[in-house]
Image 1 (spheres, one colour):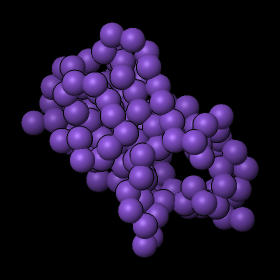
Image 2 (tube, rainbow, N blue to C red; image 1 turned 90 degrees about the vertical axis):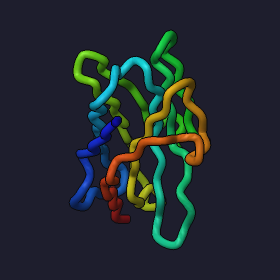
Image 3 (cartoon, rainbow, N blue to C red; image 1 turned 90 degrees about the horizontal axis):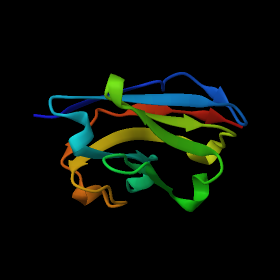
Image 4 (tube, one colour; image 1 turned 135 degrees about the vertical axis):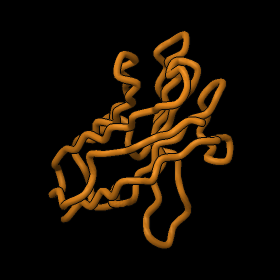
Length: 125
């Protein structure tokens, strides 16, 4: 069983500020899983934010609205995936979820078998 635990959210950050979210993946060999970040704002569907496929290549992909501001990365030694968020905007406010799946990463939430509990990111204007 794969378990994901997010951290780094909570509290309030002003627009233009930065946060780094972390997701610790346990239960299986970290390198066997592709990971991604999704987010869900109140009243909206869960949406793709960023994905990381670090099994053989360091491949990253982002939704258009966060390109140039967010960076996904991983530390295999720590079994951890990060989401560095810079130049935050009020529209980035959401619960952020880390997800993992065997195989390659995708931008579709339905492809992921394992999810963290979510961490709240709130950006004030």
